[in-house]
Amino acid sequence: KELSGTAAEFAALTDLYGGNPLALKLVSEPIHEVFSGNLALFLSQGDAFFNGVGKLLSQQFQRSTMIEQVLLYWLAIERDFTTLEALQANAADGLLPRDILVGLESLRRRLLVERHTHPPAFSLQPVIMEYVTDQLVERIRHEVLNGQPRLLRSHAFVQAMAKDYVRQTQEQLIATPLIEQLVRIKGGAAAVEQLLLAQLEQWRG
Image 1 (cartoon, rainbow, N blue to C red):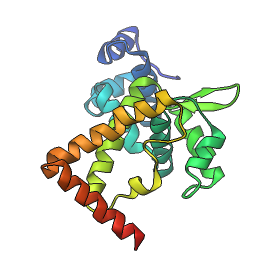
Image 2 (image 1 turned 45 degrees about the vertical axis):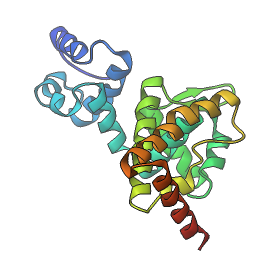
Image 3 (image 1 turned 90 degrees about the horizontal axis):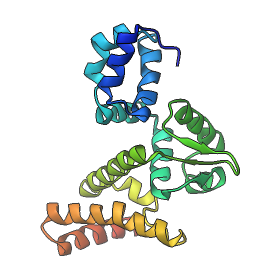
């Protein structure tokens, strides 16, 4: 990854991320881009921003463009390797085919997305999928509570035509946590139902 440093500095970097291969791959990109590959400089300053897998994933996600975040959300929803055609169909309302290709290439270069070659398909590593799923649920909850559910209108979180195991996983990891959080905040299922019905009525208008 074109990083430079002493054996001790490489050991310190490995210790910083507990030897996690994915974390080391992910952090190599900002070390190269922000610190010109200089491990000593990164270790003296960068660990304040990129220390730990959680902080590292947060930094990578926040650095992603709107298009890249849309693609990450769709890959988290799909839960499995997804073809380019399926991604283009999912994001057809808001993104051009060229935007999707550029976004995927950027995500692959930063090691946030894995590619299967035959046929070409894309997915997320488990730790990244878990993080993006949590971000997705948090953002939907925030938007619903604020009466501006953009993601709820643009993303199908539970897909009726998905394979059974995928749909069940979508229900367990996206829909159920979202509903449970809304119920806890609003004080009951009836209040959540009224909130969602009111927003549905606005869309009909």
